Amino acid sequence: MRPQEFTIKDLENFSGIKAHTIRIWEQRYGILSPDRTDTNIRKYNDKDLKSLLNISLLNSLGYKISNIAKLSDDQIREIINKHAHGNNTEEHFLHMLKISMLNYDEELFSNVIDPHVAEHGLEQTFRVMIMPFLMQIGLLWQSDSICPAQEHFISALIRQKLLFHIESVKVPLEQNKRPVVLFLPDLEIHELSLLMLHYILKLRGLRSILLSQSVPAEDLKQVAQRLGDVDFVSIFTTHPSTVMVPDYLKRLTRMFMDTDCHFHFTGYNLKGIKSPDTLYITLYGGIDDLLDGLKN
Image 1 (cartoon, rainbow, N blue to C red):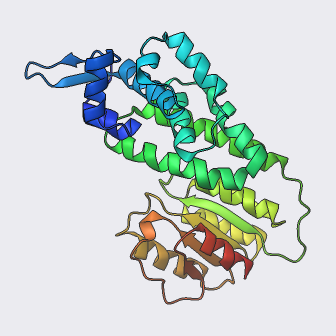
Image 2 (tube, rainbow, N blue to C red):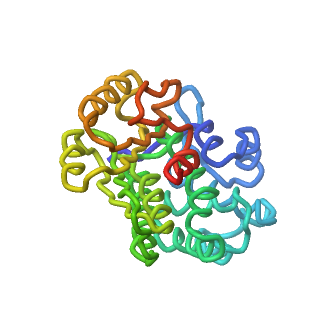
């Protein structure tokens, strides 16, 4: 299989190190040895990207480039693991998570995430660490700077952490509260924010029922027939597409007009969409607004 290739601009986007600085580090310290095309354009491989992330992380921790260049790969990894929770800046955490993704390193991922959760709680960790990280790797994936397997790997680890903490919630249910049913529409598979929302609702003592990915609208009707009037909640990230959202909302309105169910929606694909002229569907600018809407 052909190894993945990166331009110097890819390395700059991924590491935050300016291309000019990368060239200087190459020339002075020999930290990278890229291949070159026939037109003398640098081409880097996966190992180069990992090395640069490791080097830039050590540099941010106060190590001089001249000293880092003398270290072996094993020595660099040992120092990084020692500092897994020794620095609490957002840049440090993001670098560590990127390295864990590139190396398929579950242990390093846990060494970064678990202490932060223990100190600040899962919700805060998700907001200040995981969401910014997911936004960055989403942009990198779209620009082909990472392979899909790396995104799948790190998403699976985040999902495992969320499910573990969801299972650990033992808050008694509030009485006389409507069930909240969490789902993603047809073809929508981006569930990590929905899982976090499930955790928050369970902490509040609500009966939160998780249907998760790609749920047909007809199935929601059957859920309502079984549970009665409920609050449905969803996050539109990629589906339905922005142009299809109005038709989807009209369809739900027709299906549930004879019930007292309510739909609460947020997500990227709702930007610029006006709330429908119905009491049954409310659109929110973000998850915090949606949570306030459920509370009220």
